[in-house]
Image 1: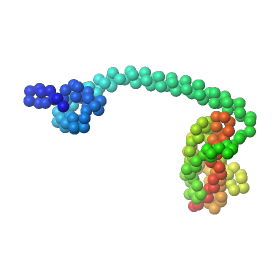
Image 2: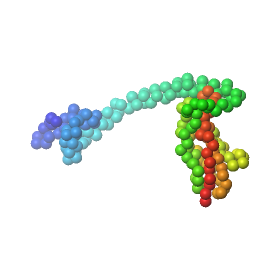
Image 3: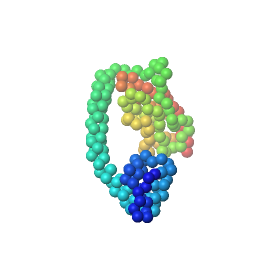
Image 4: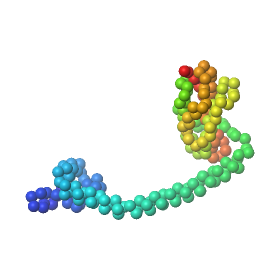
Length: 195
C-alpha cells in the first residue's frame, strides 16, 4: 500500500480510496486503510466525497436500468402471460383434467396437517411451475363446502369469520390451474381442530 505523504501525515491516495470503495484492496491493505480512516478526518472526508460523486455518476444509469427493466418485464408479460391467459380462456369450457400418472401431478403440502388449533390457520403448499392460479377449499366430513379462496399465492390464511369447530373433521385441498387448462392438486388433507 503506497501512501502519499503530506508533511508528517501519511494519507491514502486517490487510487487507494477508489480501490477501497470498489472493495478491490487485499485484506491486509483494507485493514490498514480502515485503521487510517478511523483516525484521519481528511481521508474520511475524501472517501465520503468520492462515494457521493460515484453515486451521482451512477444515478442516471440506475434510472435507465430501472426503466429498461420495467419495459422488459412488460414485454415478457405481454408475450408470455397474455397467450397463456388466451389459452386458458379457450379451455375454460373444457372439463378440468387432473394430472394423471405424472410423477409431479401432486402439489407438495407444507401445512397444516392433522390437528390444528382454532384460529390463525394458514394453508401452505409448494408453487407449481406454470400455474396460473390456485384454489383452496375447506369442506366438512360430509362434503359440504365451508370456505374457498382463489388467488395466485401459495399461502392463504383462513379468515377469522370462518369458525372450525373443535371435535369435527374437516378436509382441505389446494388446486393449481395450469397454463394448459389441467390442474394439479395437494389431494384432500384432513384438519382436526382442537381447542
